[in-house]
Amino acid sequence: MKKLYLIIIAMLMALLISCSNTQISSQNTSSGVAGESDGNAGNSSESEEDFSDDESQGDDSGNTDFTVPQGINISEETTNILSKTTLPVIYINTDDHIGDEYITAKVVCSGLSEDYSNTAQIKLRGNSTRYRDKRPYRLKLDEKADLIGSGSNKNWVLLANDIDHSLIRNKITLDFARAIGMETTSESELVSVVLNGVYDGVYQLCEQIRVSDESVNIYDWKDSFETGNVDENVPQTGGFILEADFYTFNKPDSEITKVITAFKQPFYFNSPDGVTKDDALYEYAYNYIQSFEYALHSGDYIYHAYETHYEGIGDHFSWNDWVWRSSTKEYDYNYDAYDGMHYSELFDIEQLVNNFFVCEISNNWDSMKNSLFLYKDIDSLACIGPEWDFDWAYGNRNMYNIYTDVRDEWHTTNDYFTNEQYYQSVQWNRYLIRDPYFVLLVYDKYNEIRDDQMQALLDSVSDYGSLLKSDGEANDARWGYTYTPEYYAGEYPDDFTGSIEALKSFITDRYSWMDEQFASYETLLKSLGAYIPSNKIRIFANEDSSGNTGITVKISDQRAGKAEIQINGVNTEIITLDENGSATYTLGNDMLIRNTNMIQVHALTDEGERIRENDDPDSLCMSNYIIL
Image 1 (cartoon, helix red, strand yellow):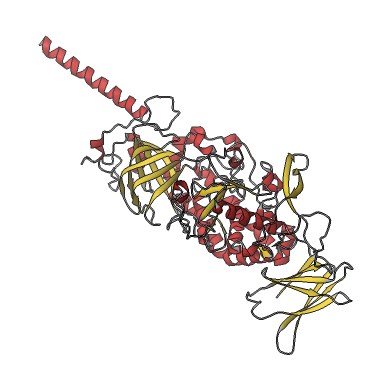
Image 2 (cartoon, helix red, strand yellow; image 1 turned 120 degrees about the vertical axis):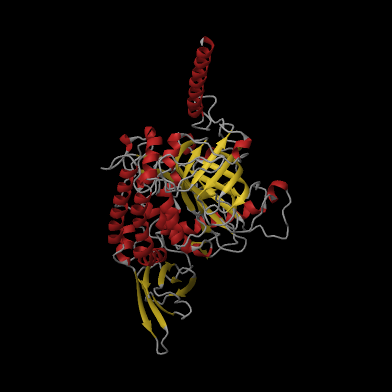
């Protein structure tokens, strides 16, 4: 009897130890991220054999639709959360910490367009967000998979959307960008992530921005520049992606190849890898971008190779009047390949318009500052995009206590939004809105998308608020301890439900304000405030006996001897004024190709020099316009 008693005691002690170890194991596997306090964090609780065995874990909540994939071991709490999820689930198991270098992970995707169950490489990604508790990841699958119906791909990212408690700012903005015509912008899908058996919150699974058929479909140099095996039969006139952010300035040249413009736009080669300043592709990209920038800064939106060029120098941002103290000095640049070209002959103007709308509707703190991409194929115009990084948009104020809840001002002209970097004060949108032709395209685009794509963006917020209710609450429960309600702007709680309501409120108010600005073309032009037509130039439309449209130009400035006529930006003609300052010009029917055509007239001297409104070399030419 005594022996039986000792056996029972021993069995009870073993059971207690086993339960204790199970609890500790569950705690230690809650995160595989470098920097956790527990040195064992990230160790997988399953062996290689466990990953592919036939065991299956059911649903304890009674939801018979939910099952854990075979070979996956998760905590009871995670099981309860996943039993209520409406999202696909990605299970990630690692044996090591996730840090700056790739490590091997076991990845199982359930509920996506294509299931995946194999190994992959994983590492941290992002700049400031990589240091948050909920961290974003870069995934490189060992086998291609079409996870979200956008095409088979190995390269994916998992955005944490950590500072966006609505979880959808990036999602709705990327979808909107694609809907209005920015096809290279990444497709994405919201997912639940389980890291080493423990629920890790709602993430956004996206295509990695890269040269590929599924992402940016341009000529792919692959590793040509890294290996030195560059095909000499392929002209080095494209096949690159450039990215701009302020981290470029401080990164060593050994890490990235910088393409910084005269006005300090901080681009670098995102792709291809291995390009150096000695390569023809670098020289081409630099001259292309710089010529475009100088076209924007010119008085008539055309790049003039042999005029005096300048570089911008930012000193400091003055908080007294919210402007940058800056200056310019002459800059040695006279590349002549693009001489006489309008900026729209270098960049796809429709994509410039689309990007303007993405910036303005989202009012994103980082727009035109960080995560600004452009790309160019071998034989095409350059394009701005793909769009990226909008967790700090739509009035979100969940990091660094920076106020962004601005609903009734233009992002492009708001000086407060430029205070971090000088180059924001001379960002490209600020110069595009000086062109009445660009503004006309913006006006027409607004009327095209207001009732369709813009309304769909707003409607999607409510849809996601309902769809993600359970998942959003679970994400709050997992990461709510990191929230900073003292930073939060507005009347809504700093959680998923409150953030959804705040987001709807912001977009609704923003649309109401924008509707007022777009009441007419003239209202929009005045609201933007960057272009003021000269009252010294008058333009009259007429029609000759053959039915051809013509214009009569009258300039009441004694310096003027000629006039430059631009039709929709690209058709440029120089006409001579008579002694009364007048001239007529017949427009070819092939020039009036739009429903609304922008005719601009710039005043020139007898020698053909542009007459500026003032002595500032960055000022516009004296001009006026008529819309036909």
